[in-house]
Amino acid sequence: MTDRWEFSQVVRERVVVWRREAFLMCGDWSLAEDLVQTALLRLYTRWHRIDPAGVDGYTRRVISRLAIDEARRPYRRAELRDALPETPVVTAESAAALDVRAALQQVPPKQRAVLVLRFFSDLTNAEAAKVLRISEGTVKSQAARGLATLRRLLHEPADVTGHIKGSDR
Image (cartoon, rainbow, N blue to C red; front, side):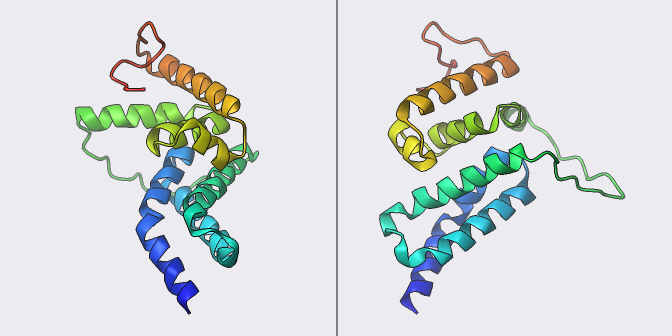
């Protein structure tokens, strides 16, 4: 019984963050929820074997791999509707965020996963490498390629060091 309670507590505390990370990796809220649900199912079935300190990393690894696998599928999930959705009010700040999200969806899946883990989840190169089970060098190269793609897509000038202006990294 304590296992169920501990699992429920961890999920309540972390599910919102995991859902946001999944959304940034796949670009679709309903797919992000599906990815998180699948990850939670896998987490629950392995709960007794997972170190409590590694729960976040394990779940992120599952979500990122599911997102990459989904992006590789030959089909894309299409939602058919009989009417167009309402158009939201767009401010300058939300327009910039939408531009970044749209550009992020054009980045290859593995690079996107690295960018989300490094810059949204604020993981170090070593932590992101551990989550994705790749080398730190691969994380660095994928992050560099992903950032270059984002810069090109957003047409933002980079400074001399190669960082996006306004970024502290």
